[in-house]
Amino acid sequence: MDSSDISDDLTTVLYTREQIAARLAEIAAEIDRDYKDKFPLLVGVLNGAIMVVADLSRALSIHCEMDWMAVSSYGSGTQTSGVVRILKDLSVDLAGRHVLVVEDIIDTGLTLTYLMQNLASRDPASLKIMTMFRKPDAFKGDLEIAYVGFDLPNQFVVGYGLDYAGRYRNLTDVGILAPHVYS
Ligand code: IMP
Image (cartoon, rainbow, N blue to C red; front, side, top):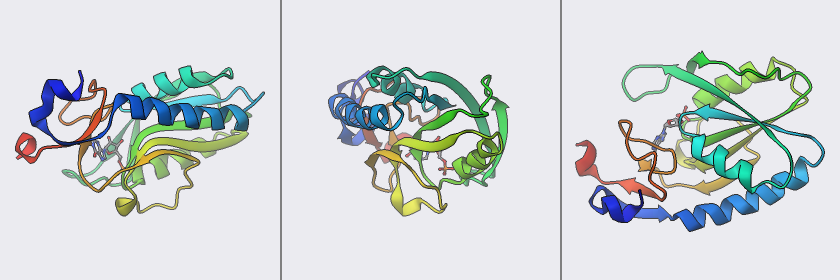
């Protein structure tokens, strides 16, 4: 699905499939250099990061392994509490591994802060974060983010793995959701 299929649902297309692919190629080149001979483990956080992991891993020239976690955040309504329940844990042992957590979007960063503490306790050789999108105005944590695709405005966006009520994850572009969709 691309933005022309659902153009009434978006107020603005922020990034096209081509722009996302070009930015991922740049980040992949950095990761190729930084992780040469390190056989990194890409940890994707389900479900949003599926597209990023799929495209980033294929843009790399080095070997990598992939594994997945699913988490759910305790909280009321739309507020993230930062307390996280692990719904699906990793299969790979992190001890001594160079781990790169791959995220779709970091908003408050609370979920990821909790996750990083949990992963750090498993003795990885290194632990870094790559996120495709970041909302800087909302970011409350003190996470160090090694690789950022794009900074977003503080609005609700969909596409490229980001959903609203389970929809739009398969949108190839990323855009701002029109208010009539959720009001
Ligand atoms: P936080 O960083 O702990 O606040 O939570 C980040 C999570 O909130 C992401 O993994 C998304 O699932 C969701 N999220 C935050 N902003 C957006 C958005 O603009 N569109 C879709 N999902 C979002």
